Every structure is written in structure tokens, then in C-alpha cells.
Amino acid sequence: MAVKTAAAVWLGTLKEGSGSFSVGTGTLQAPYTFKSRFEDDMSMTNPEELIGAAHASCYAMFLAAQLTNAGFPPVQVQASAKVHFGRDDKGPVIEKIELVVEAQVPGVGQAQFDELAQKSKVGCPISRALAAVPLELNATLVS
Image (cartoon, rainbow, N blue to C red; front, side, top):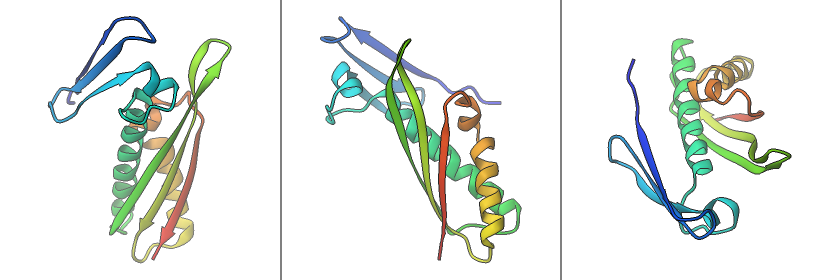
């Protein structure tokens, strides 16, 4: 199997410092700060957004594969993730992830769609990697 890479660097103290990350392909590079993670600075990304993007991307692709394998190739699977970032007695924590999915899939019945959506919820590689995080799924079949 392939090995994917990413790197990050942090300069300075927690609150006054800043960091940046990049992915191995060089197609994504961005800065992040304390404020982008723990406050409302929307001028840059943060690790939690990246987890959400990875999860939504993985889920959409995995569900498309499940639907195709069942004989119902989708026209479109649109997924978004809401990563709830909070604090517990040990410190900052991802409290839960909500996946919201809309799929346009000709010919599939609601029951079969629901079954494949749930199968994808537990089967996609990112879901499996994040198994310790509660995951809510709201999957809708659209025409």
C-alpha cells in the first residue's frame, strides 16, 4: 500500500507562535495559529478542519464505491463534516464529528441506501482511524 506524508512546523510559544503544514505532494500548504484553532480566527485553517476535509472526502468516495458495487453508480455524493472541538478533563479534544451527506443515486431504494450509508460510516478508512470519536451520520437520498 501507499504511504502518504505530511509535515508541520511550529515556531514560538503556544499563544504567540505560529505554524504551517504541508502535504507530501506539495498541493496543499497552509499556516495555522492558536487563534485559528481555539478562537474565531477564520483567516486560516487548523488541524480539525483538515480532519473534517479528510473524513468527508473519504466517506464520499467510500459510499460511491459501495453504491457502485451494489449496482447503483451514483451521479453525485456530497459530504461535509462538522468537527466539534472542545475540552475535557485532559485538555482539548475532538468531541464528535457529524457527517452530512446528500447523494443522487438513480434506482437505489431508501432501505438499501441507508444500509450502504451506515456501512460506509464504519468502513471508510478515516472513520476507522477515528473510531474513538463519536460519529453522527445524516445521509439523504436526493433525486
